[in-house]
Length: 318
Image (cartoon, rainbow, N blue to C red; front, side):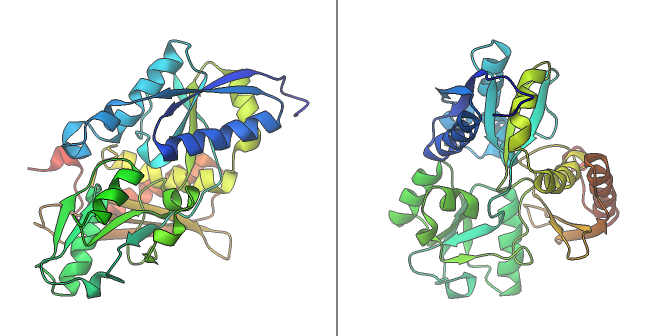
């Protein structure tokens, strides 16, 4: 128990999917190890309920966090544990991201019972993904192989639901976050891992973020030991690119930062057009980063380079 932090009674608001509950239980165990008393408040969000439409058409991934934020606002819960890639780039007034934890594998995973990769897909194959980012990156890779016959179809639902749909034969392959599969002991389902050079991850992918009411300094202090500064700097740069490009979690945007051997932070970003009207746009940059402000400065610079190369925020699209 930290000498600076008195024990607290903490209620965690969480979605009720198996992955969300794993994440909440993980945070619960870490907080209990510090002497806090922790309970879970399971909730079903609007994003969990709407499964017949893509997230980009019904309000974006923020639909997964609004009910949890309401529980914080009403005092029914103290903290909310999120997959950071699901957290909107701008939090509502009165809320704060109090902690970013050490990142799990941030990469995309190819899951298929019959195809080792894109080159092995049969004629007319169907790939499932819920992400506009993955759609544009997959389409770019398929175009390079001359595979316009392959269809990329929407895939909604929690991780177990997506795997079930694959096993039922609705798709030849699906693309998921490697982190979720590994956290649930499903790494054996991964046929291959995409390196960032092949499929650039989403901003914050693989990291957990903990949200609180901005006035809860006691919770911020209790959560401080769980924070991982190297991860926080990485995802701050990534999320700044997304914020500068319009702020939506459902944009066809990839942003990924990693630490170079010389200690500098390298940030890569890519922007695609889901309708295929323009080619994939890429930008990158690196800088010495020791603070969140410096990470965000790098993110703004790379976003500027993306726009200069032809990427357009949603408000600028026809």
